[in-house]
Length: 372
Ligand SMILES: *Cc1c(COP(=O)(O)O)cnc(C)c1O
Ligand SMILES: [Zn+2]
Image (tube, rainbow, N blue to C red; front, side, top):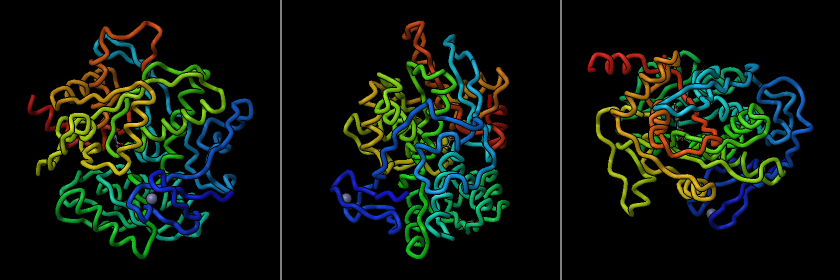
């Protein structure tokens, strides 16, 4: 199966084997690939490849996997609101980024790419490193120097080469882009294949709900790779007639880095503070796919919610008191549930995606406990 990369801004097209990661006009690229989904044709175990009919892979039967299974959709209560928690932190490397890395690394194998470059604040680097180790790909990971050490250790242990870049996230992205001149830039912030991997989460949720769409889906948003994967999957399911309306997509950001809110208010997003911010996984000042994120929110009747560190800490504890240990970035989405207290119809099912494992951030969580 060959697909074409297409620029949603200027319409320019690139054959997939040209491995372009950005259009010459500067825009992100999408994949010209519109699968026809039919739930009646699903077969096999409850794993990523169950949805192979909608994945842009030529040889899905040859794909490298860890035998990942559906993550649980677990019933929890926050602020008196019953929610369904999608436990994606239970994937192999401890975050939902495994879904995107699975797709991107397997696509690289199909295209004969043997070296990749990724820049990340943590979890996507872990996922890319693990899947690269599985598939025999050489991974070069660019990270800001000051970032979370547990994730850095995880990346190194998988055998990836770590390049620690002084400066901020943007400096890091620039260094990675430079290095990508001689290898494939597999940036989850830009790459459309990544989104075709992250979309498996919404197929799972829908199948777990017997194809009845929930009312609201609350997602922490940095570069938007999870939100946009969900949006992609929902559009495919609508086209296939599986759903007739979209769940409202709610994008959650931290008060310290809220480009969606700033955009709505016509402001630029300020520089990030020097100290590592609590919700580090969503601290992306200029998401390349900003326009697409806004489209997903608008078209589904969703909204953006901005949460404070205080709310994140409370949410993290509320989750742990129910036995579910998540990292602060992930707790940001839980914190946003408070916003829906008393504002929902009884039949409006709420899904919150739990994106990252608490074990990734134990030193930070210890600080939180010590300070409260
Ligand atoms: C990466 C990440 C996010 C944000 O995902 P984006 O694709 O950047 O929007 C949220 N939570 C965790 C734990 C993450 O690692
Ligand atoms: Zn273009």
